[in-house]
Length: 495
Image (cartoon, rainbow, N blue to C red; front, side):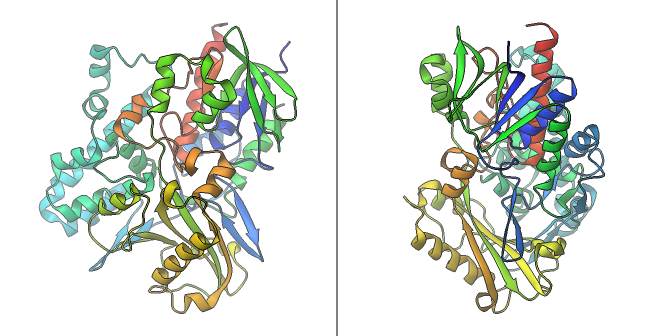
């Protein structure tokens, strides 16, 4: 007899979503989490009275009708996790001008059209295409057979048209002004890719998950979101084993039947769901000898996303100079040059950076009369062989100097300083090379080409940003929903 119906490895947001939805159907769910608390990237920490959210500063689809909102409603958590609407969502600083971005699509289109009146028609067409791509991809069910060309083309015309294209190619169809192209593709940097590389399908998910249902932050600590979901899972009869790491996925006649922990304990189940790094899942937890050669070859050819260096600061005084909490600073009008350096394991002196002031929105993040800052830049894992103290100090100094142009006397006001590197992210999440968003959202790894939820091992399923739709909180919540649906379909058929 199995210990559980479902054994889930990794209690990040996708694993929690999947587990809660399955437990709600009466299935016994056991979750295994190597860290001492649930949430993955969606976690928080404190130091000397300052509160910091690890990596999630804003979320899409948390307002009424959005994916996150719908899951919380289904779990009766709407009154326990409150969100603060961010409007405007962010401000972008360029050498010659500042651009405020609304979280409302109509306002955003109006603002861009006022700056580029001759391109108004093209701007509307870009967002109409992104909206159609997002709608079609969101309507795909877990059981769809992707490769019946005739039915796929008729049912999903926009996906068929753009599934192999980059966002840069989509923009070229409708827009001619180079700086407008920069503004329209500015959020491709949140996927750690330039517009010439990011998939049009992946970009549709990034843009529409914000514009469809607003931009928000959690009122209080972001980790309240996964912690409340964990509590729901336990109330429904589920179990979460924190502080326990999976060592091996147990196999019986080429089928997954459970998980062995590093302490030797074994948990068996009818279904195993992996919400952890895909390379770790197949190379370490299963072993390449159990994987079909074609899938093994595909996995080795896939490319993880880049990562971040993040500097968390607790400072004296307020930051009234920055009325909008989420800011990105650019030193040129092009998004591509930065990546030429990153792919050579370097960081350009003119690389843009993020300057966030979480305490402007969430005053509870800092003691009275003080503020929190989050400064970050894109980095490759190979930028430093060890990510030692010297490297961290050099990058911290560079970010503080750049941010000082916006926040007077910043260096002298610092009370708390904490760094996060790609190695930190790798250690905390298990993501290979500290990949922030799983696989890079390039066309051959995005949309229908991302790893499927059904693994080539019977009884084994995937969820999280290594499968579709991809990274970000709304994306992994969607992945958790779809994996739960796929598992239920199989169990209901008695397979």
